[in-house]
Amino acid sequence: MWIRPLTKATWPDLQTLFGPNGAVAGCWCMWWRVGAKDWSTNGNAGNRAAFEEVACSGQPSGLLAYQGKQPIGWVAVAPRSEYPRLLRSRALRLDPADDSPELWSVTCFFINRHHRGQGVATELLAGAIAYAAEHSAKTLEAYASDTSRGRRSSGDLFTGTVALFAAAGFTPSGQAPGARTVMRRTVP
Image (cartoon, rainbow, N blue to C red; front, side, top):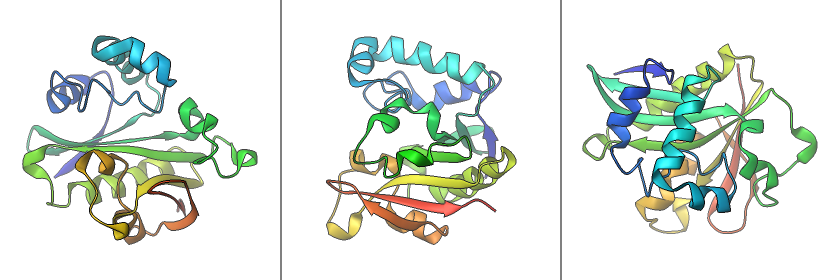
């Protein structure tokens, strides 16, 4: 397995991985990047176009995992300031004074259904930590689904699990309402 950043050159691979539905329900990894009204109004085509613009901009947006030439997984990782929905969230934004370009967020995973349970998310998370370090991040934050409270639907797991992040050295920083735990780690 190997990992590459999302760029203009790898955009077609993301399209292949996400398929015509943009991963889930036309999201195209725009859920955290726009407000709820814009996300709904954009629909599948608008979210796809908006994320293609992000991917082609050269700004950090995430990483793709490959098996051979086949894209099999995705993780969204970028400065928290790139996610307006996080910046507006009272539940997930624990310390508004902490909004610096050195604070990055891991917001989403998407693994091809034929490759789930094979460690792809673990590899992507390791890649995200290294990628954030390469871009001078000091802290990495995530919004994990707490599966210790019982079985979660696969739709709830797109942010990753507490166990996944804990195994990568993240520690809980606070509990958001519902089943999300804000996890953080220092970037080496």
